[in-house]
Length: 285
Image (cartoon, rainbow, N blue to C red; front, side):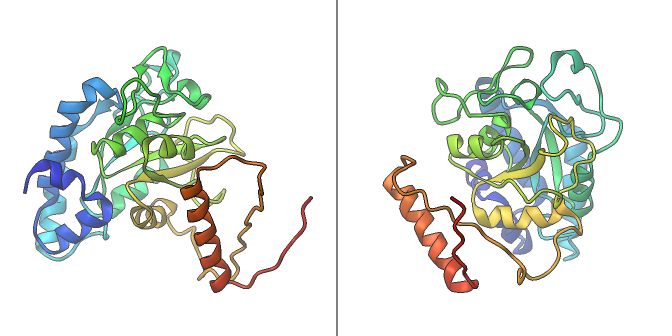
């Protein structure tokens, strides 16, 4: 199996391949390493790497899968971390030049949760300066480029996270969203992303933009992958079976210009929710 195929598996695909012993976490990490070496110089998505430590963690994860004793279903899955989220031993600057030499002494809470699950942090990712902007054209750490067109922005502020997943440099990536900073890069780069409900994902170890509005959320190839990552980074904060879930569906009419296929997908999703949950129309005009 070649490295390009492995890098296209995503989280769910890797988990299945590990369980079926078709590949190992060590082989998966090697595939992502090769792609980082080949494509990151042009994309400038990853800023700092921890490959030596990651290789050791991949070997340990490979052993656990051989023994059918993985720490979780995402054990051994390589991921990237936005550089405003602390990873021990790596720069923790939030895209701010004045903090460029600051090294994280401990992992952020989300990184601790992922480490306990066996997921492997490959390195930290480029972002818009201070997480306040949507282009990831960083004056201190360089411009991040969209993998689909190097002349286009990957969005921001989590541009490095969206670009890294889209380019197959890691299986998933952590970003942060205060005003769209997970959702915008996910849309621009053609990947999936989620801004979790406030408080579900712990924010310890995050360089704040607005503490009451910041959300840490994942980027991945698809929604299935997100569904595997979100419970892990949340720790024990996701509770219940959804019986008390409240979902708002906006009725925009012609007020927002949307491509037809996007509108159709939105309507299909809303219809599924209406079939599965009790609905109530509320006028908020």
